[in-house]
Length: 387
Image (cartoon, rainbow, N blue to C red):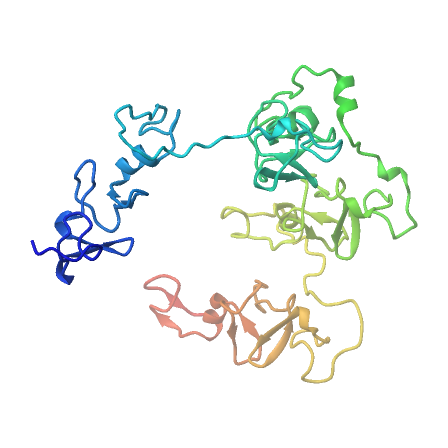
């Protein structure tokens, strides 16, 4: 091997290192054959080598044994002591002294709420503007370690997990357990349960409002914390249910009926939806007597001035506003008027058919009136459509 000047060759053998066989570590060039762990002789590459403080290269395992932390839990397995009795290192491994900051007491009201110690930035966890030690930030009852997602601040200015918070401060009674049908009281007496609840549910229906300004169902005053809106009227949250089946409703399930009441979708369909074969949940007849319960089958307003010719709804002639506008062949319709002229089926842009008589039809009625007639053009394969 051709020796290089001191400090310019391979750190391991001292020979010249050419570009074709060069391996770099900390700016020093090694022969590819010399680039191995100094302890276990394992061949290394740029991903597996570790530069030691003694200017040598190691594999990851040997580097951790020689220069890594010692103690329980720092071995190769889950729990083990890494002491390396045969370690001939002249450089001692770094020792870390962990100080318990809880012994450094803070001024009253400024330290950790649980231990009273000073809280430094590296171990700070915030809850309701108060700093906690990370090791102290756990549930008061079950001692479960918490984070910002599962921590709940209790009325006693302590922190709980969601389960313990629900048991101690949540509602109690049948149906309020963790998904099971049993009473969740956890051995508490009724006096303890009622005293631990920070809030109660007042009967706001006893505060009557002025006529036309209160809840449409009970007539009581409606405050912002319990307000539900439907067609510009304010309802109590507990009154906001279907007037027939009394199912609790929300803004997605509520349907405003023409009688100024609110219904769930099923009850609204039974009372005001279209009747007949195929309009039920299954292909059954919804109405037993064959009569429609739609109060306004034509969908026309009671009064008002008609629009000018060619500018109103094509069916009723009244003005059409943008919120209820449907367009067909450059003509505008009310959403309630946008239905088949024969079967009164509601239409949209996917099943609309414009007829030569300036009316709109569903596909079935359009085919019967304006479609081709003859053998093979009926509903079945070989039937005559003579309509």
